[in-house]
Image (cartoon, rainbow, N blue to C red):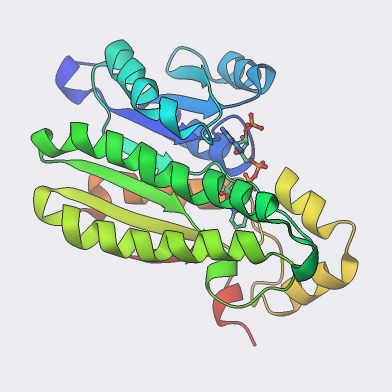
Length: 249
Ligand code: NDP
């Protein structure tokens, strides 16, 4: 592949679940993909599966002050960043009154503040090139009310607002910003949230017209579309990949 055709993506949380599926998809299209996570073992397992186009960086994105150096390091190694997928996230299921300020802050810092900081540093690099695609991973928790996930819902609803605000400010400079709102997708996160709570799982599936849980690959197909020129005239959208869950009765 010639130097000109080289494309580089960052996928936060690319070592597992939805992020890993997105990484696999990008790599199958020849995109150099940097995956970021806290668990070194998870990252090296992904790397050994995906090969030379997979690059790993072990970093806790809730450490906001180190993010400029994190992005700088990726640029030093790979020379460019064309695509950013803000996928890493944590959930916390607790009764509203049991959530401490520290709990709330932890989820907001990981799911929201880091997305702002990483995007800002990547956009500084994309602006002079006049091109780039940023994809934020949102959630059904931003589409309707889900009980016992107050901090998560706040973080993902803010992601949708930030997606629109970034799109209007940055699209004139050639940088497209979109979000994907996955429905109920089979990953470690949903196993934890749903498998021990059959009533909640039944409720989720009861309002999903396609009637089954999605696979990480379903989100990855949408991410590839939004990352590439196939979606060149699309910016500022929050695309549900949800089997119809968001419009279900
Ligand atoms: P997983 O728990 O499987 O993956 C989350 C990833 O985020 C892990 O690879 C984890 O890596 C990484 N991560 C978490 N915290 C940090 C941190 N502080 N620093 C760096 N990396 C971090 O979850 P999913 O794949 O299910 O979720 C991915 C995204 O999709 C999340 O944003 C989630 O909110 C969203 N989503 C998922 C849905 C689903 O049905 N699964 C539905 C709607 C939205 P490590 O442990 O190595 O740090």
